[in-house]
Length: 47
Image 1 (tube, one colour):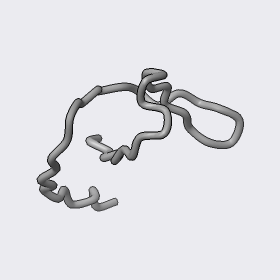
Image 2: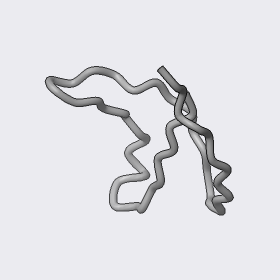
Image 3: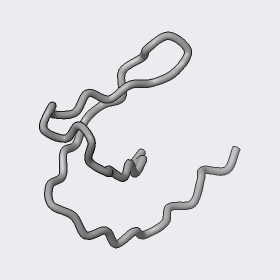
Image 4: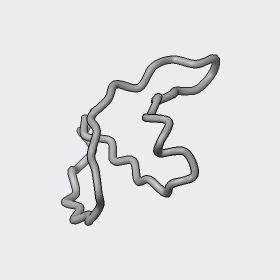
């Protein structure tokens, strides 16, 4: 099976957090700081 090719992304922002995705029912979940509520975020899978 061939591995997915990687892409390079250039993103400008204010803060970055690296987290592990946790199982939540039939999907995944990431908990972020409460002061991020209502903010726009971008998620990039790195592995």
